[in-house]
Image 1 (tube, helix red, strand yellow):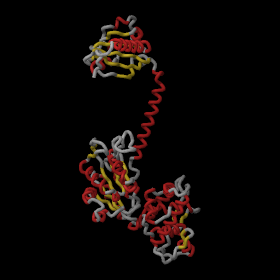
Image 2 (image 1 turned 135 degrees about the horizontal axis):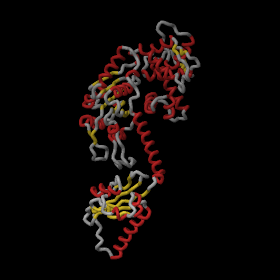
Image 3 (image 1 turned 90 degrees about the horizontal axis):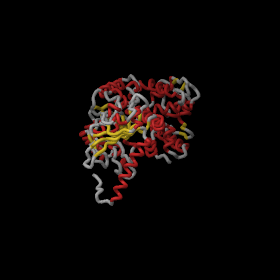
Image 4 (image 1 turned 120 degrees about the horizontal axis):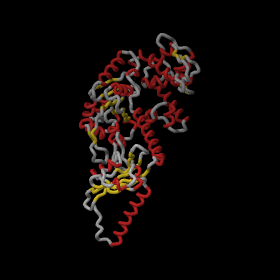
Length: 490
């Protein structure tokens, strides 16, 4: 919209013209060169300094010529034709490059009648601080993107799912089949059976392996924030949202895989919205009218009994059927006891690495320790096995771990084919400083030990649950659940 100067006092027009003249004069004086072209990109005016740079002893000799004939690689014609400025550019002319700016000239009707160009600098050194800062920011951005991309790659392969048991090999076969298609995958199994590992392996083996793998732990996020976590939010959608809004996990995972861990804990209202996205492949961020198309492969996992939750009305049947296309059951460790030795040694190899609890030692398991590990039911599965071995390694001065060292951490059970030694009985019947009555069930004894262990860990961390969880190597949400389930005083 043009300003109407006709109704202004006459002196306003004088001030305006003087401002324009002064501005042009300032640019002409301080720049390395100035030229003006007409609507056909022919030179109307060029100052002496600029003309001399391009070999003209008299600036008048350049008047009327096409701008490219005077200034090689000039883009003044593009400015005239498009009517759009080129505010900052580098003009290569065979000598020192020039930093230039080009502006269109328009009449009262808005028609482009020419253009004016200024060569601002003739030495790039003048912009070295700016270029250095830009280069540093670019390098930091590239590094951040590479780090983020690496974080969103699969961390595990099917080789990480250790074992040769028949059920283990069947799980790997099903995972390979799942990787070949784009259908949703539902991984079921008890806690610690390797559901997340399988999700990573399926993504890493699939055609989407080079695209993002984004994880959402439904159980670890408050219900009120889950919708934003999934679908994002527009700027100002609610108090506290970032100025630029928030990008949801569905948008971040576009082209790749979205792993929904502990989906059985998802609140019912969000289940309906998730089902709609899976069906329509589109969604609207919270507080936005923007439709976002998404191409995401879903891998969901849960340790809950989903059919029972559906029967109880706590999980939508239609969402269950939508997810339950390819189902993989991760077997508990008690059903793959033949894999325990291989798993244990793989864990010990990792723990023996420099900087870990083994401090570079060559760790071995005594035969009675292997029998004890095989006899245990492992309610926490591989996660519990790892926790047990890590604690034994940290507290052991020997490179050979026997049943006596393991007994305090997994509770005493008669070993197949052998009688326990008095020392083992003493270790097994005493957990910490507390006596465990022999009449108690194994589950009760284990629960009592875990309750005392968690209480001691929280006390050692000064009551800080997050710090205690980090020291023990478990998630904060998992620790809170154990505190509530076991009645641990905090």
